[in-house]
Length: 293
Image 1 (tube, rainbow, N blue to C red):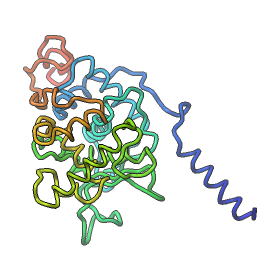
Image 2: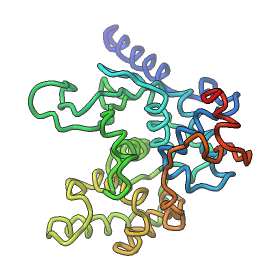
Image 3: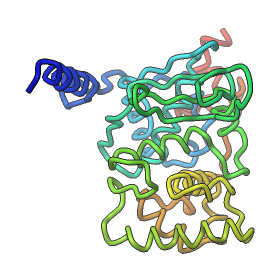
Image 4: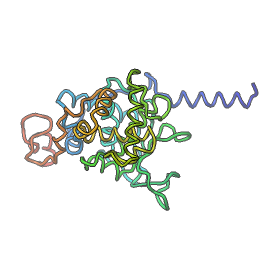
């Protein structure tokens, strides 16, 4: 072995060890989930509102855990607490059915103000990208458009959520490659039926006989992310129009989304609203007292 090759191997190992999140480096929440955070989730995240109180506590813990282990950085834009909680919610929603899930393949999410191009530029032509999971020297990094991040939680009927789309890619990547076959989530007996169904549904997209976002026809990986957006945004509609697809997604994500009351929309908490901490008091007399006194 030449000294040059030896240096390359050692450097590669150092980078791998530095980037890997093992049990010793993984941080866990030690503080209670703040009422301010609860209010932001209640006002912005329909999925959170559809959970039972026990499930909400679990979701809150997973939100904290994600934010302790992944940086959220603004690029030519400011990042506030709402932005961070929306990113974290997008990460947790697809893996909520799995206990002790760790996103070991991401260190940082970069928030761009709007769309960008393949060279990560915010100006110039071909700025059509709203989200991206990094590869190569960008491995461990995700880029999200701030505008698209917020739109994904405001529009609950378009079957689209860019941030969830990208985190599903990241889950897919955990299996080794982004190929639309989430081996880390999927039990082996479902793999072949899943591939066959994907191929069938992509053909329907090309034939113009589908309500699935045409971008899902690009390849299996994009189909998996696109249909996952549909699953988490409009589950009852997906179950009605594509029952086989819904059933397999339910098994993959271990969540019966159609059973959730997603009609319980995110609400604006006003001074006389019931306090989200469930004290039975009005917001202005409880957690909102500091704002109104």
